[in-house]
Image (tube, rainbow, N blue to C red; front, side):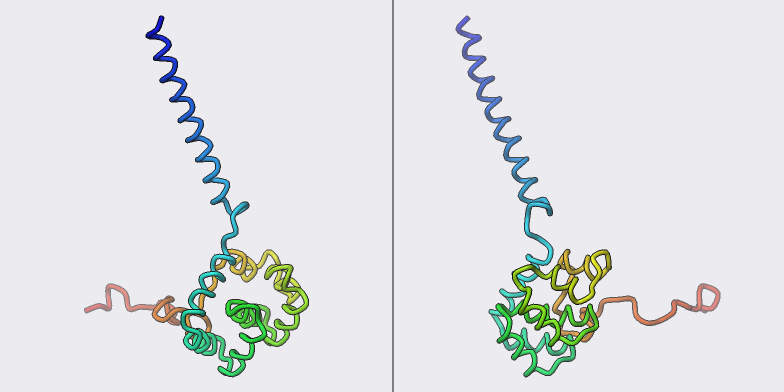
Length: 169
């Protein structure tokens, strides 16, 4: 029966390994789940802060160009904000809510501890709207191009009325 004992100890080790694998998989899913992990807007803002701190002059210029705000106003907003990404959000939420960025700054100063979702709601951005979803998902960009579109993207402004096969002679 000693053979069985060795077999059982290997079997026991296998169970421990399987338990560890299952626990690791569950932990991985929990940590990477959007419900448990800070993702979306937080990831975008953290990355934006890294970029801004590496090149504050370029960051300020891109924000100015993208939102059509004078560079001096952008620099003043950066000084008011806790971090450069918050300054970007002043202009982004101003554009989304169709309100001046100064109004966003006022709401930010009174409610910044409550998060960008609460600030957006107080600016009139509806929770079910495309703007609100883009905000929560971090589907924002600092491209430096007016309107926030990256250069060379999009389908253009044409109506899609090509000549077709018959006129392609």
